[in-house]
Length: 60
Image (cartoon, rainbow, N blue to C red; front, side, top):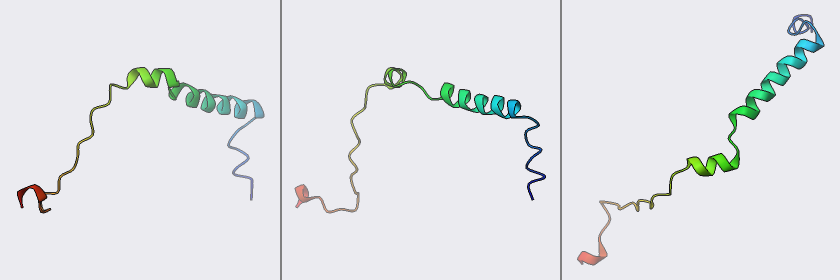
């Protein structure tokens, strides 16, 4: 049952190196909170949605 899964990593060292690579990739790909705040431009005012089919109370 586990014969095909045992050949994924030939040794424990290769498995550890692969896991370290995955963790390093995850660590390097997520920006720090300081970089995220600097990269974000100033917030624009939110657009208020206006329903074109709604009855406008100002025109009544």
